[in-house]
Image (cartoon, rainbow, N blue to C red; front, side, top):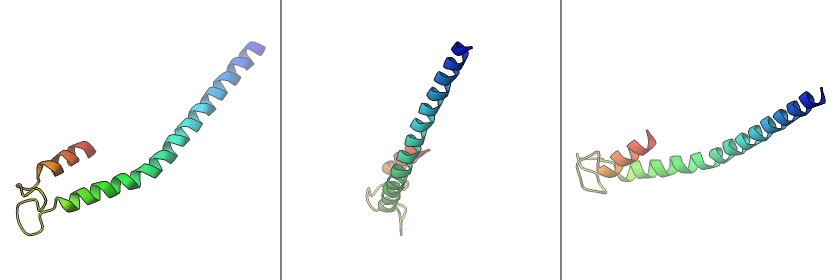
Length: 75
């Protein structure tokens, strides 16, 4: 009987450790996501085509290689 209880205790503690680790991951993601969104928005804004068919930064046909690569990385 004690073996079963000890085994259950270990399983419970292992589960709690895992949940704490995940909570830390979620908290870290909440810190990082706004920064990543800001970077992506800035990149898209700099590689826009306001009045023509070419990227205003790269001067290449839009969507430029930079924007295409960013889109593939995010997808």
